[in-house]
Image (cartoon, rainbow, N blue to C red; front, side, top):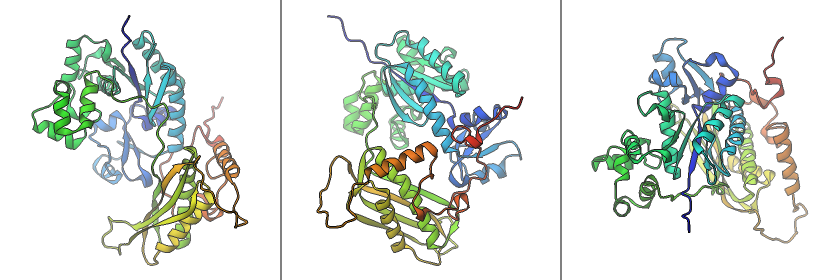
Amino acid sequence: MSALPSPLFALVDGNNFYVSCERVFRPSLCGRAVVVLSNNDGCAIARSNESRALGIKMGTPWFEIRDKLPEGSVVALSANFGLYGDMSNRMMSIAAGLGPEQEIYSIDESFIDLAGVRDVTRRAVQVRSRIHTWIGIPCGVGIGQTKTLAKLANHVAKTAERKPGSYPDDLAQVANLAALPPSDLDAVLQATELGDIWGIGRRIGQQLKDAGLATALDVVRLDAAMVRARWGVVLERTVRELQGMPCIDLEGQPPAKKEIASTRSFGRPVTHLEDLIEAVTEFAQRAAEKLRRQDGVAGQVAVFVHTSPHRREQPQYSRATVVPLRKPTADTAALVQAAVRGMREIYRPGFLMAKAGVHLLDLQDGSVKQGELALDEGVQDRSGLMRAFDELNLRYGRGTVAMASTGLTGDRRAWVMRQERKTPNYTTCWESMPTAVA
């Protein structure tokens, strides 16, 4: 009887994804130092290679970058999450052609099961080229016998391209660790630091360094049983995965969230209750959409609001409350009503509120129904209405249909976040679509 083929996984990851999405529609940004800023244009959440070369680190506040570097040396853009989400969907649909199963791990990463795929390296090169040609996003592809090795291979593929000499040149862009001779694989592992291993965080990494380990090869040579006894099952799983034993399955369908949150820092301080009600209405609507997307219902709604902890010279205030629902629901109206009731309860005048949010708690599967006597004439099944609600917003854009308490003044609302450097919604808005002039 012939042995079963060894499992093989690929990780497809967009390079500097947010920046790459911006460069697709603004080629003039290619070769320039670019950073994408977080909500309210706060700090860097994505950096081009040129920005990294200038020493800009992830999370660096924009005012520090602006004040320390020469004027015009860095292009800063507000995050355009609508654009990034749409480009992600396009990239994932192309990447799915690499193998029979796909797990979308994040907005710019997906694992692919390569079971039954022949000549995987050549096919990976083709799919990477297809993504770059069709939608303009450069990618790195890593291939390994486990998801951890595929993640490591992806790091090798991207680093070998960005920093020539760090790894063998033939591993740039697409790295298949499963195809390497043992001695070559050991050399790659020896060149990889502990912090570059998926599953080893800062705390465990420091403990491993204190124990005399420095590279991925040192981790591979550990005894898995000893690791479990000393550091626990999570690190043991990482060690076994690095040794080529699959311990992490591919998740074709992401697990349902146990809590759904929608929160925002405000673009400017908010003092009026009416503005805070608009904000939590918007947050509850978005959370309700996510809840219905996983076919769930919520039993409680938590609401919070607080002032800026960074402005200690101002009066400080922070409050939260949990509003229980009569029965678990995914109805936007019921969730918004609970959020508004909670905000009215915790609001206090005289404070400059900087952030608020809504958390949906006690989540359950929507197939589990709680029955009740129809003593209230208002009790009715509104699931069809909610489906129409979501379909209209999906087709015509978020906010097309909304609860009245969210306000009708668009970006002029007092609480909306600051996005002074945001580019157009090139792929999701007809008015923003680029046009060619003959």
